Structures are given as structure tokens and as C-alpha cells.
Length: 276
Length: 274
Image 1 (cartoon, rainbow over the protein chains, first blue to last red):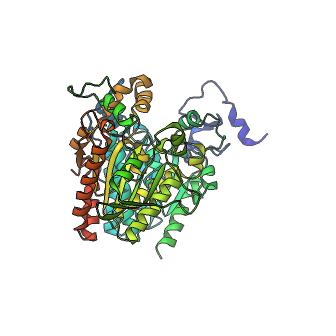
Image 2 (image 1 turned 90 degrees about the horizontal axis):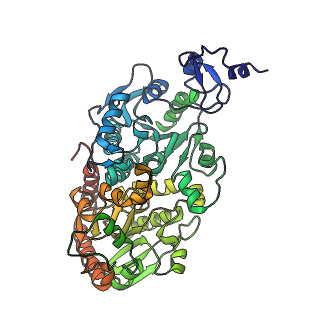
Image 3 (image 1 turned 120 degrees about the vertical axis):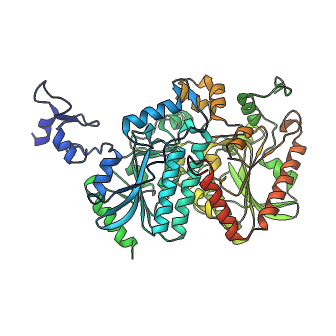
């Protein structure tokens, strides 16, 4: 019996969330301490659980180097949108107080293994990482900062796509963010995109897919249209690995799938090639 | 559409019906009615030739341009060939090739938008629908030639935006432009596709709302009873507007043109930079 198989059964009923983490994929019980120190990667099945933006920043930047930019930029409600579950503004406000985040992305300056970069990290907890006008502003302004400082720009995406509550304004964020990225490309400034679980819809169809390098993590969900929509359209079952990072790499749209524990080293190495 | 009373303000849902109605001018009608010459250019040079998104050299009122746009069919057979105006990645890549050719030949681009959306299929995903659209967004943002967009019918989300980033966005009076179809929005946020009329109103997808939000620049009035009642007049209106904007944009230097385009995109739909 391999050591990790013992982890499948919790030792006693006293097992609590504080002591044990349950892998969402294989349901293994993993000591919370071990789960956290492995950056929420399951020691049994290598499932890469979602990280918060703060955890991600800690993972890939040099300790204490992150300086947040444009924290004052928050969500806007241009349509005064209201659906069956109530006003969008109320939902967004509740999300702000629950997560402590002003938007679905946090941006700032940082160092990766001593290399100064501008970094954007999305957080799926904020309305599914959806792309709203505040999200777009932060991503665009960070790109402009990277251009001004002539420093590489790195974005970690995690998003279900457009924020429907901002309607067409949400769609326009795809154009705005790509316009800012295009200016980095013209200026020869490196732009690395890491598509983490999940990166779909309007985010995959904009800044996330146009990196000099497109990177991902094992088994991350990456796609344009939702699985259900595709199944309904083509009336057939989709392959099991459909829209995984591995599938997308095989089809030529991802450069490399990087294990979480190796991500910082990988980025630093790529940036050294980019900085020649 | 005989049940619509044009003496009353139309609801967004009624406008959705008009935008989708058969008999409304399609790209074939615009090519025939406003171009004295059209040479279709085929293929993305990698996979194939998409029939849901077409383009080529066109002469409009003496101006040589690159015309691209979604293609829908007049009947079921043509619509199947055109995939109901839903382009695959090779369509967006063909459009990109034509955009770059337009830049090289100093031709303004005129893009006619009329699509329910980019095709959501297995093959489309495998060939990189997301990447194809994303790449076009970066190309259009910095393209060094004038770029005029006309939303003629349905402006369906990323499938529309994939050819619709430019200097001027014109929109027909009863066209719609949205991030998701009203049916799709309703089935997600209302958990009931039948609430599409409510979703259509909440999303502000009509030309007058989009003008107020600063997403479009000008509304092109439709003839009495809407475009399908008098396609000829509608095509002339579009031709005149396109010509006016192409000629105005041609007077700018390319540096001014691209700087203005970036400034416009920077402001448009911003939470803080208005």
C-alpha cells in the first residue's frame, strides 16, 4: 500500500476542515498543512486546485516585492443591471466585502527571481473572475505601466469570461485589453500569459491567448464556448479531455504546461531569454 | 413583423426580432447595391475558406476598400453553406489576412457585422476559436489603415467583435449588439431562456442605448417599417455613411489615426478613464 493511499480514509470522525483538506478531484484526505505547503496540489493525483490571487502572488514573486497598482479602481455598474436574483451592484458589493478584492484582477509591480516585472493575477472568487470594466481598466493600466517602465508583463488568467451584468461594456474590455497588449508587442516588450483553471469565453478570446508564450497548469480548463453549449449545438458527446490544458497544447495553442511548484523558476528562465 | 406598431416606441425584444428578420439586407445585398466592383478573396492560407465570413477588394462610390463581413443566406440551403453567419477560426484568420493586406495596399477596411456569434463547435475549439478572435483584436487595434464598422443586423458577442475594432462604429437603427444572446443571458441569469425579452432590456443592446454608452458613434436610420421593407434605401444609407467616414479618416496621418483609435478604445467602456 503506497503511503498516500492511507490518506484516502480520514483517521477519525474528529477530522475537520482545519486539519484535513479534501482533494476536489480524487477526494483524498490530505493533512491541511501539507496541502497548503504544496500550494494546493494534491500529492495523490496532482490536481492543481485554484489559488487566490494573493497565494499566486506569493508563489511567483520574490518575498515582499509586490507593490499593488490601481487598487482604487473597482467595479462599475454602467447598465444599472438587475436580474432575477437582484441588482448587480449589490452582488458586486457583497463580493468586495467577502473577498477583500476591488475587482477580479490584482495588478502591480513585482520581482520574479530578481527580475522586475508588471504582474496581473486574476481571482476566480470575484464573480467567477469575470471581465468587467474595472477588470479591463486594471489590466489596461498595468500594460501601460509595463510599457512606460519597459518591463515584462505577466498575466495569470482565471475567468469564466465576460461579465454579463455589464453587457456590451464587458465585451469591449476584450478590445481595450488587447489594444494595450498590442502596444507592448509593437514596443518589443515581453508579455507572458498563464491560463490557469479556468480560462474561458471572453478572456480566452482576448488577452489570455495572445502571449508571447501561452502557459498553463496541468488539467486546467481552457476553451472558448462552454461544454454544454457545444454539446447542444453539435448534438454529440465531447471527448473527456476536451478543453483541458493538455488538449489545447496538443492542438498548438499552449507553449508549455508548467507544474505549480516549478512556475516561478519557469517564468524567470523565460524572462532571461526574453531579456536578451 | 406585421404585428409591430412603429408609432409606438419599440421594445428591445421587438428590435431583436427586426434584427433577425428575413428579408433584411445581408452582405450580398450590400455588395450588390453599394459596390461598383467586388473581387472576393478566399481562404486563410492554413485550413480552408470560411463561408460564414467573407471579404475582398471592393469599390464603393469610387473609393477602393477592403470589405469584410459575416455572410448569412437568404434561404435554408444558402444559410447552411454560410453556417448561418457563424464563422469558424479560419474565417477570423482569413479576415486577419485581408486586414493586413489592406494595410499593405493602403486600403481602408469596411467591416459589415451580422452574426449570431462565433461558431461553438468541437472543431472550432480544436482549431483555436479563442486564439483566432484574440489575435484579430490585437491586429485591428494597431492596424495602420482606416477601419469603419457597420453593425447591420446581429452583433453577436466575440464573433462580432472579432472583426469590429476600429475607428468608427455605425449601427443600423434596428440592429442589436450584445455580449451574449438575450436567450443565453436569460438561461444563465434568469435560469429560463423564455425570459429573453427581460434580458434583452436589461443588457441594453439597441442602437440608442449603445450610442448613449459611447460604444457606437452613429445610428443609421432605417426606412419606414424597417430595413426589410425597403432594402434599396437601406443599402444607399449605409453606402453614404461609409463613404463619408472613409473619406474623413483618410485625411488623417496614420500616426494620428492609430493614436486616436487607441485613445478611443482606452476611454470606451472604462470604469474610471472616461
